[in-house]
Structures are given as structure tokens and as C-alpha cells.
Length: 142
Image 1 (cartoon, rainbow, N blue to C red):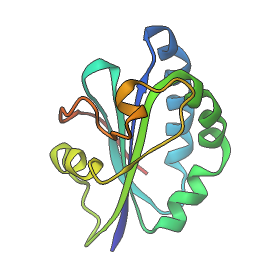
Image 2: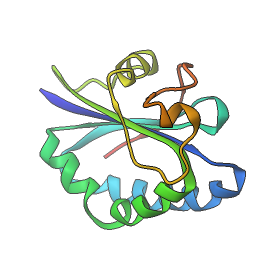
Image 3: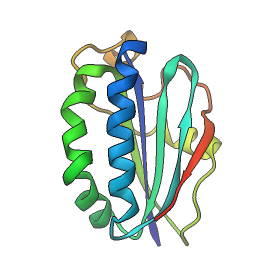
Image 4: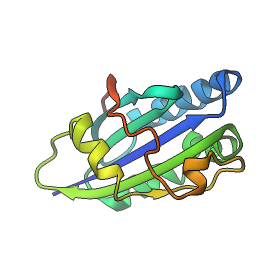
């Protein structure tokens, strides 16, 4: 059994993309050496929404990654740079990486994360305000 972690972020505007890109690059570099990481991908949706899909051996491995190094340093920046943030986790048999349509459907049962400047959808507790399935982007490998 594997653990799937999905995040969805929407930057407040184009001016926030450089800092988000930098933190994404650093977190991706950290991910390559993370114990328990099995694979995943990045995805994009309308309105600059950015998705990450990662599969782990278990929840503990994901938490070790999340709470360390570059990923941990990115979190304070994202709270101020994004107007929407949400996440969802679930367990799967095997270690297959879910397709964007499943990821999007699962996000409906996710939860929002704290942001300083929430969009109306975020303020209403909507985890996926645009309702559009993201387009799969680059793969993430251990």
C-alpha cells in the first residue's frame, strides 16, 4: 500500500511566479533524495493553478520530506504568495501514480490550507474553485 499526497496552489498573480518557481526547483531537488518517495508529477490548471502529485511508501515518509529543508522553507512564502491552497491525501494499493482526473475528484474531499489573502472560493472552503481537471506536466522521479 502506498500514500498519495496532492497539493493545489494558485499564485495571487504573475509577479509571484518567480519566487514560487525557485521554491519549486529547490523542493524538487530535495525530493530526488527523499526516503520513501516513489514518483509523481507536476500539473497546471486554469488561472495559474499549480498541482503536485506525489506517491510515497507511507505517510511518515511524506511528513519527513514536508517538514525538512527546502520544502519547509517554502511554506511561509506560499502563505503570502497564493490566494488558494488545498491538499488531499489517501492510500492506494500498489504504487501507481493517479491520473489527473482522479486527483481532481479526490481534491473535492480535501481541505484548504492557510493563505493570507484568500480568494472568494478559498474563503468559502472550496478546495478546487475552478473545477477544471489539471493538465499533467513534468514527471517527478526518485
